[in-house]
Image (cartoon, rainbow, N blue to C red):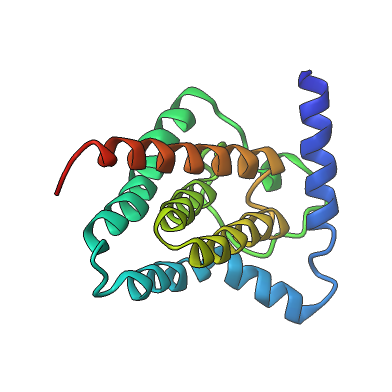
Length: 176
């Protein structure tokens, strides 16, 4: 099983990262998606729910679960499981952005934005789907620019969705 996961990681990484450096506009877009798009996603969430009756609950579920997922769960996973970033262990990597040498598993960005998108989905299906697609794009972009493995992204997506589901379930029991 471990060999299958390693092959998936390496093949997926080489496939996406191999596209880097081929087109300057694609490279710029993917760096933006990997590094800067997150600010627009949070702004989008605030605009969607501004002045809605369920503003407090929607923001608490979406942003609250995103922060818990990234700053509690990802921190614990990275403490327990060290996974070096691809640019640290592979030769011939197209490095498009700098990153700290901390563990890459799971992706904190992907975890945060999948939790955020899932939380939004509970209150606004169309906006949630848009955010889930953008969170997926961000995850793929982070492989493209060389800072994550595919399994980092998959694990981050699962962790983010699970955290939002738990937060929503817990808050449904609380009236406010």
